[in-house]
Length: 120
Image (cartoon, rainbow, N blue to C red; front, side, top):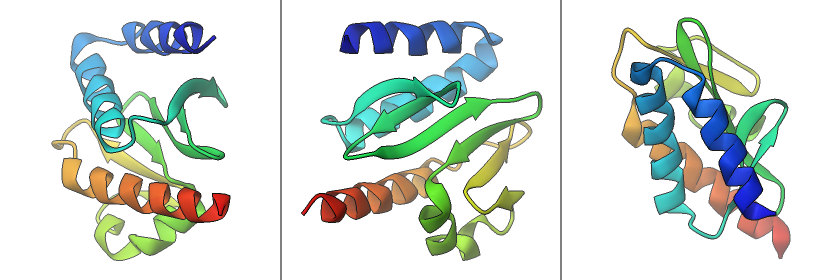
């Protein structure tokens, strides 16, 4: 079943122009490196990493990549994400700017730690 999920994420990614595919694949690869034991699935019609619950979602939109580290992930990094449009559980990374890879890394690592603690 996991292969099916990975295939559906690749199908999601290939629907977009190459520049957007590259950004989506960069996020996907980064998260895989940080948390290789997480599973991937489509949830809320978005690629999702799952570890004891939904870890993070990400999705492509007309002008940005939406990244969804849950409200706790947004709250924890509010100072660093204040330069981006954000809401209770999401942040928008515009295509007009490079992806903030280190910020995404920190947010994912925070969520991994949070979800591993939740399991205990």
